[in-house]
Amino acid sequence: MGYLICDTTKEEREKIVAEALGNIEATCDGCMPGLADMYQDYIDGKKELREINMEFQARYVKGDDMPGRDGCGYMR
Image 1 (cartoon, rainbow, N blue to C red):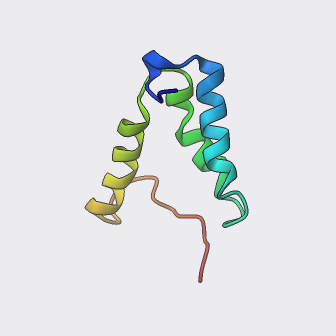
Image 2 (spheres, rainbow, N blue to C red):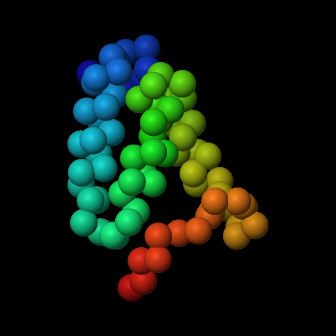
């Protein structure tokens, strides 16, 4: 099975995201809802996973001046 929008149904995309995010569910209280929201455009067939991940990573490459970069408060 592929991961591209053209190769999946909305239900399959929901399952892909749920399974992927389920692996990190316990790592940071409060982070999970934000991550699930981040992938909604993929589930809805608007953006590919690659696009979403590139946009997310670009925030960290550019620096702290990007809006919406509040973090989750997780401290080591």
